[in-house]
Image (cartoon, rainbow, N blue to C red; front, side, top):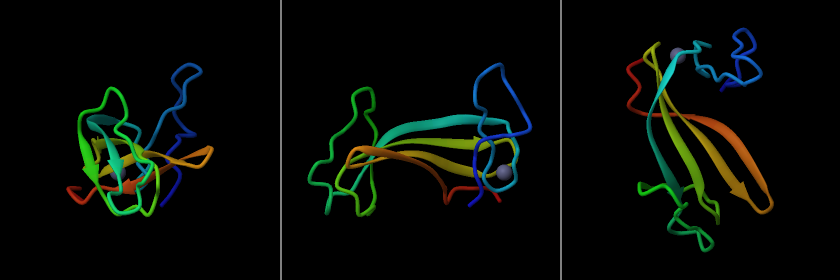
Length: 100
Ligand SMILES: [Zn+2]
């Protein structure tokens, strides 16, 4: 999957995300939740401010913050902040509800 930080579009000093499939910059947020693994997630917790819990076999001990996005291009994907020990990885994953 391609990077999801736009290099061609700027919004002041902010980073703009782009679709990891087709590079389009325009999205809407469709849901936010905590993603956790019930099998391996012995240190998993529901993040404050999120009420939606998405159970997924991530193989991670700790929870992830997940933001589901829908692009005007028709692609749907998740922006995930996954805690792993002391670091937080940021990555994208396709949502299976994608129209393309
Ligand atoms: Zn797209």
